[in-house]
Length: 360
Image 1 (cartoon, rainbow, N blue to C red):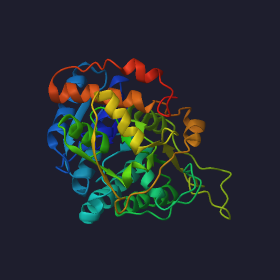
Image 2 (image 1 turned 60 degrees about the vertical axis):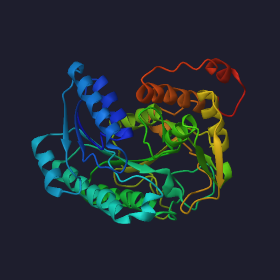
Image 3 (image 1 turned 90 degrees about the horizontal axis):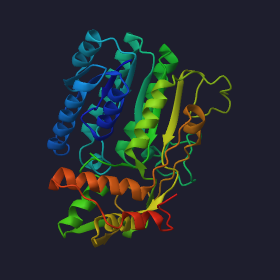
Image 4 (image 1 turned 135 degrees about the vertical axis):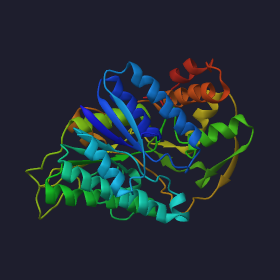
């Protein structure tokens, strides 16, 4: 197939394009390569995709433009005929949305509107797009289910992603555009974002600098390895959304519709406390962290926990990578990328054999 992937210079987008090229799809990437975080790692991801595309069976091309530029998006769809669109571009970051909300309006609302309009007129067979577990906000009933309401986001970032879900539903209803929204749960792994906890903790521990541990390390996250996320994205994209014929307007299910619309969680279904997560990083590095314990930050939620049963039922896949394995993979990559030498932790086998909430 020929697939448009937006945000292909980003963490998840890069891994998604890499996997699609490996299986023989042709891919057009669309990214403005902004400087929300260091662009060096984005350029390195793009270079790797270019190198991989030389041996790939499918074709690969890259467009540098802003999704908020309607003309640039329209030109992309005029020049290419896509079988699928996977929309992963967004302004990410929970805390940054408190400082610069207008960047979220441009990227997450205007940019997404341009994608919806382009998909509508191009009659795209299926639009799959990234949402976030942050939409659950003030909800505390665990595990989080797509079939329960998510109407109380705690930060503007989450509010824009919730808006994306509603915008997608309107296009599914009005124009018959099949859409699937994917609520990602705390994604981590090699080539990750430098503003995420695993990246920042690893960098600080290696530099003997203190790490900031919010809520005194007591909150939990359903950490999900990037390869599991990508597998879920591609399987969901391949499985085109259809109307739920049992949908009842008297008792509306928020995850489905009588239009070709649906929502899935993609999470590991195994929450881990931040304190235990840090211990796993320390073990993989063979080095203790200096911790600066701080209260919960504005906009943060206490816990996340994904019910991934709907994804498993619909596309036959459930994330399962143990956190310790994923962290070890990240640190091997980190040392190789930044220190130019391969890291082979001597105690990995011992960790994997230890009884722990980290290993299933």
